[in-house]
Each structure stands twice: as C-alpha cells, then as structure tokens.
Image 1 (cartoon, rainbow, N blue to C red):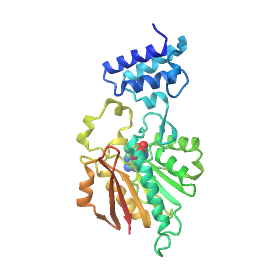
Image 2: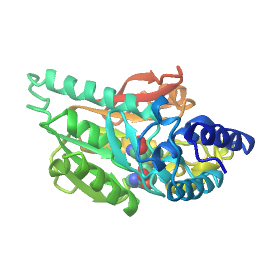
Image 3: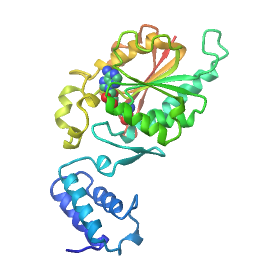
Image 4: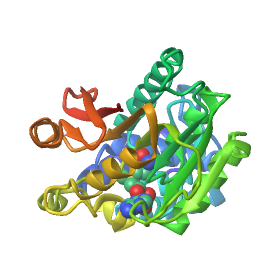
Length: 297
Ligand SMILES: C[S@@+](CC[C@H](N)C(=O)[O-])C[C@H]1O[C@@H](n2cnc3c(N)ncnc32)[C@H](O)[C@@H]1O
C-alpha cells in the first residue's frame, strides 16, 4: 500500500471517478489535505508520506465520501465568501451562488441609508432579518460587513439554530445576533420588534419535480432545507413576501434567492404584493435568474 501523497491522490481520483463522485479531484485533494492537517494540498505536499495513523484516518474519510456524504460534513468546516464556517449534518450547506445574495443585501442596506432624508423612511438602517438562516452563512457575512447592524435570525430547524449561533460566535458577531427558532409562518412572529430595514432569505424553493434530479449528497441535508415550496417551489417565497409586507419599514427591502423558473412567475403574478413592489431580478454567475428584490412603499 502506497503512503505517498501524490500516489494516493491519483488513486483516490480514479476511485472517486469510477463510482461517480462529483468533482473527484477536489474530494481527493481536500480529504488528503485534511489528513495531513492542511486546508489545501500544494506541490510541496506531494512527496510527503502518510503515517499509519493518517492512512487509517484517510480510509475512514474516503469511505464516507464513497457513501456520497458531502465533503463539507466530512471536513466539518467550509468557506463561504471569506469566512470559515462549521458544517454539520443535517444543516444545509451554503452554495456558492448564494454569495451574491450577500452583495445584493448590502446594496439594499446602503439604499435604505441613502434615502434616509425621506420623511417616511427609516432614519438609520439598524435592524435586518435573515429568514431561513441555515448555518448562518449570510448573517455572519452581513453582520461582519455592516458593523452597525443587528440581525433577527429566524430558522425552523433547531440544529441549524445551534450552528448559526456557533458560526456567529466563531466569527465574532454573536453579540448582534438575535435568534428565533420558529417557522416564518408563525402568527405574530417578532411581536413588538421594530420595523426592519431589510429582510434577506434563501428559502426552500426547489420545485417538487426537480427534487428527483438532485445528487445523492442532498439526502444528507434536512428535507426542510430544500422542500417546502410545494409543486412549483413558491410556497415559502409567498409566505416570505407576506412576512416582509407586514414587518418591513417604509423604504425597506426584501432580497431573496429563488429557482431560475420563478423569475417569470414573479413578474407575471407578483409585480405587487401588498405594499411590496418588485424592483428587479438578478442572475447568478451561471447567467440564471436567481435573486429577486422587492421594495416596501
Ligand atoms: C435553502 S436553506 C438556506 C440556508 C442558508 N440561508 C444558506 O443559504 O445556506 C433553507 C433553510 O430554511 C429553513 N426553513 C425551511 N422552512 C422554514 C420556515 N417555514 N421557517 C423558517 N425556516 C425555514 C431550513 O431549515 C433551512 O435551514
């Protein structure tokens, strides 16, 4: 049995490819790096020899990957934008396209601040809500980049609430996090909390028919992270719009992620919802319509 990193990498690459593990090279690199106490493999690591203990650890991790457990759960941490987050099943793993949602939310936040001379708008944006927080990826980034902001995080899954807290604490922003373990649809949610400047969300939105096309890795994530939107995937999004209509301050913004099939539906059927007005739809890095922004009049 070889113990040299370069040879093990080739062998794992072949093995993962053979059984259909997506992006087999990345899995081989990350798992090997993890076993030698690194985050990524560099050329200098190629000639290293693994100890018996490292080899035994590698075998265990590879077996998990062969069962199609996501790399992020096996490694126990993953980067989102430039923050490092703890990852644990069954909490949803943040996807790379969601990184743009953070930029859009920050644009909305600045827009509220810029219009603060309007008599009916907010004097200063201070409070935002992230609905469907998951691991806390979006909240961590926003709280870190907006030092005046406080976040009301709303999440249904207790395991996800724990992870949001842990990730905010790890990244030094938990003192501005207020966590609510509840469904977005709970009547009277947020009670007497002040009006919000911004609501941001990556809700469950995968249309029921598309669930069958997903990779086996998603079965390790909680079904409530992807499902819940119903046949067309819009169920939670409509709840989110009603929540935003009730809780946003005048001039506040709602920014959310959606399925690429939703853009046209929202233009046709949800140009207005209560006092919300559709402002724009934005695409992800693959050119698919992915994000929707509403403004509260
Ligand atoms: C697609 S994941 C997004 C997680 C995270 N925001 C991200 O982008 O990585 C959706 C999250 O919404 C939560 N969720 C589903 N239905 C919900 C509801 N009705 N109210 C609150 N949270 C909900 C799920 O538990 C899951 O954590």
